Length: 214
Image (cartoon, rainbow, N blue to C red; front, side, top):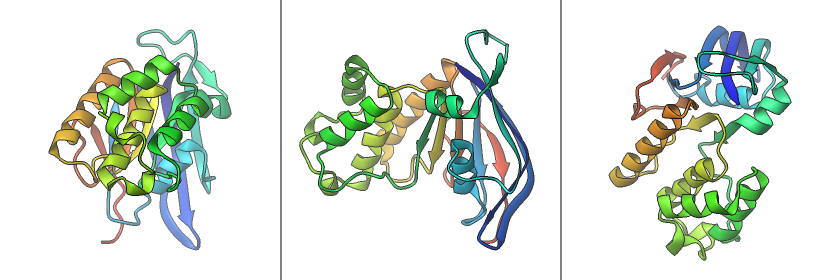
């Protein structure tokens, strides 16, 4: 199991503009970190770099864990591709759903692709009250319903590190409370959360301000 993420002296840019330089952060099992800062400060880019979709200009992102990583132990260094494949979920600001497919088709595909099993899938559907939505095309879902579908993916195919981009933004009060419960349970089981936020995370979290211009 993935136990730690260690970011050292990371620099990222977008086009000709430097987002940040020399950023360091260590995230361990059971911890959450909230990334704050102005729009364009690099919060989403940092999540995508950890997920492996963006190559940093400088610095390193390393993962550790494995079968020898017991309580209080970081374990061995993991190959980044393996760590990301087996231990990382990215929930982006946009849901990435195909508009003409039903919620059932999208969720079944994503759950299978991520290695989930039918029992976990059914539990996620029940936890997020998705049954009435499953036969609707995703283009007919509200923003909050789409986010619930994405949140269900996190528990249908569990991974140690959740990379969340504005996870609460489309949710009403009821579903924000459910999201808080899911996050708290994930951390209690040794999971990790790195989230780009404007609203505070509903779980205890360290804050890392990336600054930037308003």
